Structures are given as C-alpha cells and as structure tokens.
Image (cartoon, rainbow, N blue to C red; front, side, top):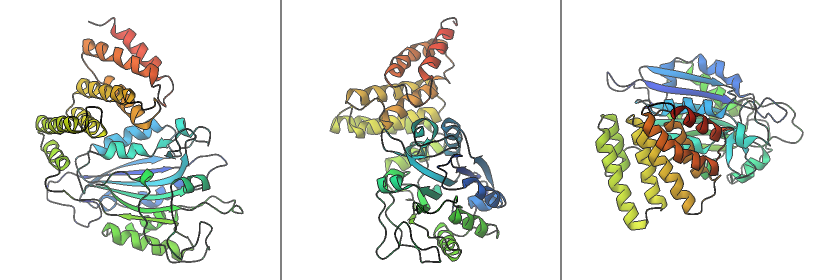
Amino acid sequence: MPGTTSGGEPGAAPGTVLLLAASPTGRGRLVDAASVLPVLAAVPPAVLAGTDTANVVELADPLEPQAVLTRLRAAATAPGPLTLYVVGQLLLDRRQRLPHLALARTTPSTVRYTAFPWHWFRDELRLRPPGGTTLILDLHADQETWQALGIAQSPGSPGPHGPQGPVPGPAPVTLPPALDPGRDIAVYGRVAPPPSRTRRTVAEPAYMKAVGTLLRSGRRPPDEELHQHALVRAAAEGTYPGCVLARRGTGPVPGDPHTAITEAVRSGRHADAHALAARHEQGAALAHGPSSEEALHWAEVRADLAMLAGDAALSCHIWLTVAAARLRTGQAADASSVETAVDRAHHQWGRIDDPARARELGSALAELRSRVPGRREGALDHVRRQLSQLQTQG
C-alpha cells in the first residue's frame, strides 16, 4: 500500500500516481504550483507509489475542471494502490462558499466554472478499497478561504503571518470537514496560511518540494515518516507550515459492508456487490425513508457499482433517480449533491450503446438538465443535440 517500502505480493496490481499541480495565472496567484513537478518527475514511479511498479499521470496547470475530473476518475478506478500528490491554491466559490482547487484560468469571480470543486475528490474516491489511497497535499489559501475552512492554530504557534525563520511546526489539526476526502483516505501535508499584505512574491510549494527531494534518494519511507521529514526540511529552509494535516486512512473493517462490496468488485463479482448494496439501500429506506441520506447513499453506491460493471444505462438511471429524489426533498438545484448526481448521469448517458435506451433516459436527463444546468456551459444543449441525433437511429 502507499507509504510502505514493500511493493506487495508478486503479481499484485501496479500502483497509480496522479501528480496534480495547479494555480491561477493572473494577479491572484499565491503559489507557483507547477515548479514542483520537475522534482517529483525525477523520482522513480515505483518510489512515488510505494509499490514494485506504478503508472504515473501528470497534470501541470490544467485549464478545465472536467479534464482533471476525467483523469481523477480513471485513477480512482485503477485496481492497485493510489497516491495523489496535489499542489495548488484554494479559493471559495461565491455562491456556495465551497473550497475549489484553482486552475490556470480561475479568477475569484469565475471559481464556480473554472476551478475544480474539492468535494469531487470525495465523490470519486469513495469506492476506493480501505487503506489503498493516500493524498499528499501542499495547498495555499487566501485570507477568506483560510477563515471559511475554520482552521485553528495550535496553542502557542505563530499566526498566519508568522516568522520567516525556522520554526517548529504546529501539531496536526483535525482535517477541515470541507477538505475531507473520505474516512478511508490517508491525508498528509499542509495548508499554507495567507500571505502578509506586504508580500508581493509568489510562494514556492516548499513542503512538496521537500517530499520530492526526500524521495529522490530512492527510498519510500512510511507516510508519517516522510511527512515529518518533509516538515522539518521545509522549516529548516525558513517555511512556516501553517495548518499541518496528518491522518491515517482506515484499513479494512470487519463487518463493514463497504469493505465487503469492495472485495466483491475486486474479485469481479459485480452482481454480488450490487445485490449487497441494494439490500442495504432497502434497509435504509425502511428505517429512514426512501429519500433519506442513508438510502440515497446506498443508491449512489449502486450507481457507481453499475459504472464499474460497465452497465452505463443502469448507472445513468440510478443517478437520475437520486437527483430527482434530492430535488423532491427541497435541495437546491445548485447544491453540490444534486449537481454531482446530474453530472454523473450525463456522463454515463454518453456511454449507452442501445439507442432506444439512450433516447428513453435522454428525455429524463433533458428534463433534469433544464432544472440543473450544472457548471459546464452548454450541458443542456448537448443533451438536446444528442437526442436529436438518436431520433434518426433505429
């Protein structure tokens, strides 16, 4: 698993590494995120992943959130251990006040449409096997985002504008809920505090550069050891870490249905996994109501399982049902959970091979898209164009 020097059993699936470095190109840029990629790229893939072999995907200053989502989704469905190295700048969207990873074209007024919503990490990683995913972060925040995240300094530590000389890092804090990618995901790194008003230079991702420098030795220590050494190295070079993040991912929990479902998927028993999720959805609906969060959670799990099994039509249908249920309960059309459901339905709809089924689900999708346009410009027009083409097919 990530963070160990062992690559696992012979014949085990290779690890997957996603290197994501993103920051705006305009005046609001706080960090030169892409400057860390040459350091990380010099590390052997197997060392980056902590496995015998690994596949590496690099995203340097991407322009479109959908492009990032596509790469993240592919990495999340890889069977082996997954390690994500994420460097960048957090901004809030003005409507929902949710943190986003700013991309190259992002400005404070366009966050909602040009940045990558942080909760998409949680959405895409939730079916990862327990203990199989590590997120290593070097993030920078402006004053507004820092305050919105509710980050508290540890007792006796410097404030956001602390000294520039070497200082001991503060104790790890509870991961801000808005940044939590899920309970099974290990998270290490830091959120750098807002710059002082007098600073005009763009910061370097000092923590992640320290991680890369340490890994260039060819040895991958356990995650916690790597994290601590990186903090010490960065502090020795005069970097105050800010909010330090350190949380182990949970391992397999006996009796946890998510663990059983994950094992079924990994062994190719997709029907068994779906049936187990369906039983839990039925139980949650009886106990809490069919539109309760508990029941909708299991419906979303079934939608993801259908996607993994290659049944795009079933996945699309379930996501449409989830979106409609959330709207019926009074959730706003621009709520992240509603938009995610419609976006995923749209994504799966585009992969349906049967024209008749695509027409049927496309009509429902078009109706929902008229109420939930989402973040991607022209989504409703895209559905209508595709439906028009489908009408000519048998």
